[in-house]
Length: 308
Image 1 (cartoon, rainbow, N blue to C red):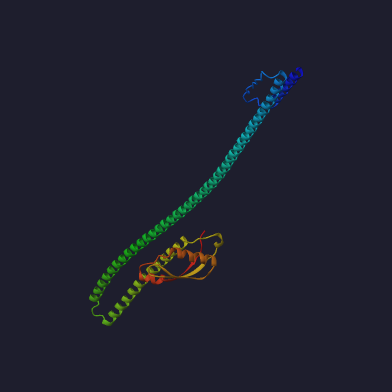
Image 2: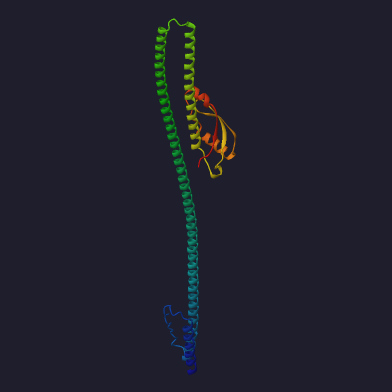
């Protein structure tokens, strides 16, 4: 009997050691099983029965603990997989957001470059427009000045013509008076001689008037030639390669100053090209409204020498 008791105590000790090794210390403390032995059995049979019952309970508890541990392990693995899935989703989201931000930044830079390019083009167009307005204003000013100079010259010519006419009238009056006195004093002179002297006098007067008129025409022609040269020089684009060189041109002008023909007659090609370009820019050149002066200007030859 004592041997049976020792066996029972040893079995319980081994069971306790096994439970201590496999137990989860974080789990709640299991309830101690109570075994009620049959009081009617002999003492040795009671011990064997208790040992048999305890062994089954221990195995069941061990199985339960193992199942619980496996369940916790599966739950932990599931929790880790979920965390890894969430981490991957977060990483994918960050990468997607980074790509989106990079794309938006690239689009922003492209739009900024387009905006700067548009601003530069607008600034350039504005500068060109400003330069064109300034050139137009300059051309208009030059035209107004030329018209003003032409009007001043025309007024001066008109005053000179009026003074000449007045002087001519006075001279005629004086001549008539002298003639009348001569006729009265020399009434008896031969009629043929008087008529011959009168014809000679009238011829001299006509020649004098023609000479004065020719001088006026030549003066006006020289003036308008100078104005034409000035207009061409104003539009002439020159460089150092033209220094000391010239070009001879023949110009045909309409009554309003429009250049109907411009033909080089010889000289440096570089200067001739620049002169023809300056004439095209000017479009019209100064001409006189006086018919005689215009006749001298409608087909003229000019020598263009760039001035530095």
